[in-house]
Image 1 (cartoon, rainbow, N blue to C red):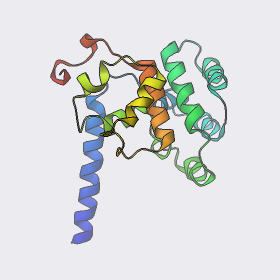
Image 2: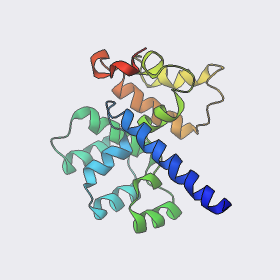
Image 3: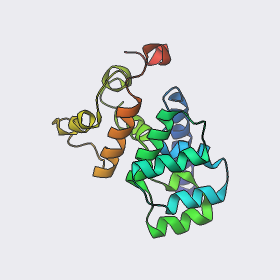
Image 4: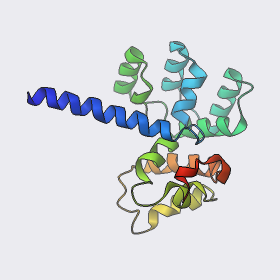
Length: 180
């Protein structure tokens, strides 16, 4: 019976995570989601990206060859994510080669913002409307109330890069129920 409750809890939490992510579809996609779009189900593209190393410029060039019509902000967002998070570790790469599950890859900046920002303050006034460069976003982690946010240095850099590229949003692009 306890095992059945555990399974039900996992299913419930997974459903809540998907519903929460859907509530933020108005935000620009993060690097992991952009990779899913780039690959469009092609296992070879996913495996190539997961195993490939590169700097931002190299990743941006890679994206432009795969998707020449992709919006420049999306190119920059993915390139920043990939330069910080790819290639993945060999054990993850092995599992990824079998499963092709994007959730095996590190979270992107959008996912980190959804997971970490809204618990203490409004996403709208505390995040979506701020205009900062990467150093400015990175400096938010020096505030005493942000020191305890459970993120690695790479996750903080991933969040900062995504945020610098994609924030602030236009107020009209944020659903009214999420404003203020």
